[in-house]
Length: 122
Image 1 (cartoon, rainbow, N blue to C red):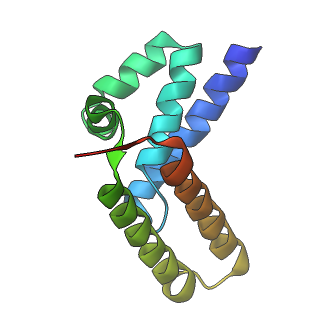
Image 2 (cartoon, rainbow, N blue to C red):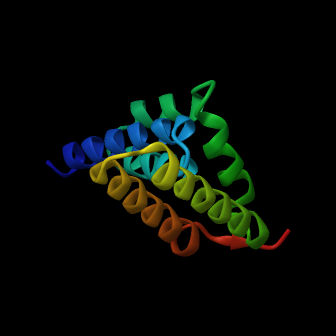
């Protein structure tokens, strides 16, 4: 049952990461990294598909090759994410629910970038 929950959470995180490629303000890399870690605990097949994926694999391999992100990269990423989140909230979405969702997802991305992804010196 634990594997099934990890697979479902990994797929949800993967979908959010893919949406983040196209929707300003949603983080991509943190959700893809979360998917990879959930898949590695639950499904070798899904994990291998993700890291070998022509479009998504680069996000993950860049992180794994460097074992984290530099402080400057994190600051740049979070700043850019919040700029795009602000654009989405104030200029793109007109209703409250999408605005709240974008802000919640940006908060999750910020926490992941700040506390989950290791900081490396470059």
